[in-house]
Length: 325
Figure 1 (cartoon, rainbow, N blue to C red):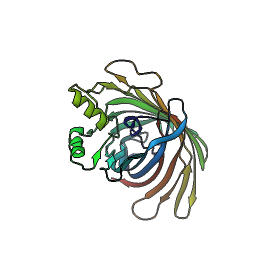
Figure 2: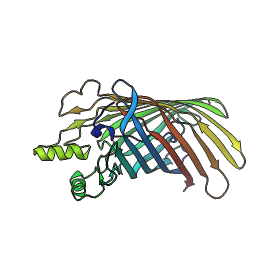
Figure 3: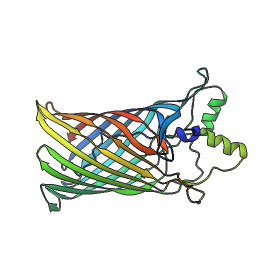
């Protein structure tokens, strides 16, 4: 498989530790998240879905955070910045000289803001103890993109440089829909869907290579519309009391799809769409002793199939802290 580096280094972090269920926070209760994710891979899926050597090895460490708060007994507000900021990463193409400056994909991902409205549930407008159903309208707010002019100066000076922006940095609007079926006190099954529609982003360079090409030609970078992101997930959950707290485990199976991007208003090229199928087992433990409840989670995402993207393995650690005013 042969691909241009400009395509290979655009990789996404998967965070299976975030539960996409229909549960909401009690009124007045806050929950904060701190996450650390490490992703790596040297294989990629081509346009036919075949997995082969990518010709490039990528590794990245990302730190993120989130906050949820109970507005009412059936409405929860949330702010999520996870993936948050890639603090350390490395891009190593095959045959790249060890003495050459290191390339990375450090930078900020975008922020999600929304409100989960539980329509069906124990204390929702439609009360039910066995079925929960929630809708979460929200927006994705773009944060600062990589300054490739500055990175090109680093490259020219022989210093380490950022070769790719890790995120799309385009404003998007959409919603999440989640439904849970409670089998018993220890087990429930969740199905989840998220759809985010992107708005056009002006004069976009996603990599240093693209920026340098447009600069050399003295032309403006193109306007790009990423279309949408679609996520579908099926996740069985298990939980039981253990010692002074609560043990939990889940096994999400996640499908993500995006169309090819349109450039300067022109339709995407054939076979430029992408998808991924992954499985992300995780375990958790909620410590109920002490003045502040704490929950730790550990998860690992394994790619199962895909198209036009890197096959990244991701390990995630998460700490949740609960508090109330």
